[in-house]
Image 1 (cartoon, rainbow, N blue to C red):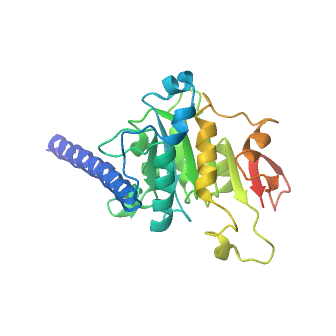
Image 2 (cartoon, rainbow, N blue to C red):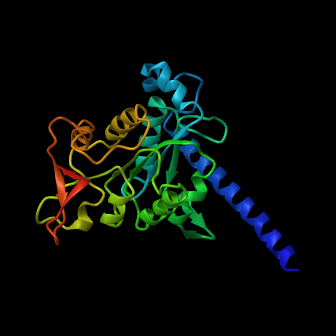
Length: 259
């Protein structure tokens, strides 16, 4: 009886996970269609310029993009997916492509509840060349730690870039190559600026980040070359500095803020 119940549970779980993946693909496909940028046969703009070696390396691989707080509304989803599809190609249920987009919380619902912990299941069947996270929700670093644990050395073998995390600071730093945040002006309430950065285009930094990521073959090292790498992702008029913890006064190696 217990064995039968267990088998039924496994079958239901498999159907659920499959339906989640289809729902995600449908959501992204609808965003592309509404923006007039449906998947096609043309080579995406940025992939026309990469070397033969890079094309060979990326064959069969995905770069996962997670859209979290501040970037998970319909307007941002439409704008970002259109840009990513034009530049790199977005994977849908019908068409393989380099970029695989997940939207929080819509693509992380388990039994009607938001479960960012399901990230490992969502990417389990993917061969990743990298991950870019915009607006990481609370608890994402725990999900990333579980992904780290799947590798023998406890290290994710591909680059992970995190922008504007709403998650635990130390957790984000420990599970990413780097974390980049905006330096909020003094006197402005945190709640009022979570979704707004003056004169900032998220699609541009995403394009720059992925263009740089596809040339990598491994995670970035937390050394003197990291800050110049991050600086190149920003517009030239942006000032970049190391993040300093307000309580301890300690300067982070891989966490930066700009204004």
